[in-house]
Image (cartoon, rainbow, N blue to C red; front, side, top):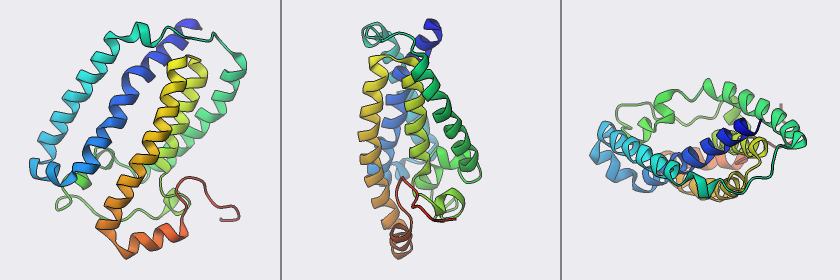
Length: 196
């Protein structure tokens, strides 16, 4: 079990920061990246992501020194959280195809569909993908039970909140009054009670 926990923590440490930083590079500088073009933009970013992941892998030992051992209680808590993550992924899969997850509609809006997602799970919360990512990180951090996982979870919460602000500004610019009306009726992260 210790080996499984170690590899969960390693995956968290190596891949979480590059994945989140990817969107911090895209959203605030979207006009620049549109001029660069989607293929070159993604090639640059994927190369940088691999370099960053490789760099984090090289310093994995100091990052993964503090661990708290196997906790059956935390693993038992992580399992239903991860089941929820899988359920959310299934619901999101109906709306978020690979081209959306890689940012192609943002990078090449003239070529890819630019409609506002408001149906399905998006009729309940505006940012289900970020909820899913946070819950996945929570499940992995609890199962791994390493200090680095908990630190990344806390940082990810801050990164997600900041990223949502940046993304919502972009959506307001793109969809205007339609997005404002959507924001007025649908909460960001937690569904309102009493809705069908």
